[in-house]
Amino acid sequence: MTPLKIVISGPVGAGKTTFIRSVSETEVVSTEEVSTERIGKTHTTVALDFGQITLGDYVLHLFGTPGQSRFDYMWDVLSEGALGLIVLVPCDAPNEFPQARRILEFVISRQPVEFIIGLTRTDLAADGWTAAEVAAYFGVPEQQVLALNPRDTANTRHAIHQLLQRV
Ligand SMILES: Nc1nc2c(ncn2[C@@H]2O[C@H](COP(=O)(O)OP(=O)(O)OP(=O)(O)O)[C@@H](O)[C@H]2O)c(=O)[nH]1
Ligand SMILES: [Mg+2]
Image (cartoon, rainbow, N blue to C red):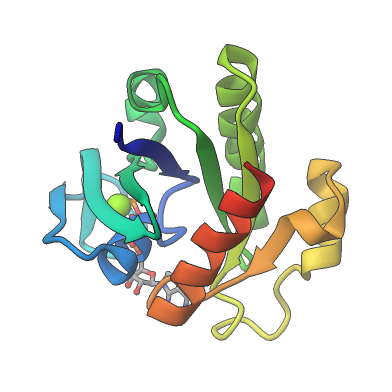
């Protein structure tokens, strides 16, 4: 059976690489380099992350995008033929929300793909945006926004399940 393609996108530091590493059943292919920008961590994705998970009869290929805006052209490359999209949004970085919205609007304008929004870093920021506020910002129903910790495999598996339910 042809593998199904899922894209994990979102702004810098949202947890895309961490998400794919925690959910993938195969060793993840990552392309991280030392960041040239001050982004609060040393490494950043420069091309893609790739992982895989089998759910029932389906093999899912997971592609993670880079977050830095100099790599925006990768959205198009990586989202071609995608079945679903998870946009990760860090609850404590509202300055990154416009970038998240650009990603979402760009991918959906290229092809009508099902998506969910994963709200990350909720354990780190007590005063971060809530799921309801983020849903309002993106103009989607609250059920489409899922608070999740990309480090937690149960959380990331649940997010993939939620996305597949929509697909
Ligand atoms: N505690 C906690 N840490 C998180 C959460 N989300 C992300 N992180 C941490 O934030 C850091 C950034 O995560 P990455 O996976 O590198 O983020 P990324 O989206 O791949 O970033 P770029 O490739 O630079 O765009 C890592 O140290 C993660 O462990 C969260 O919900 N909780
Ligand atoms: Mg990354």
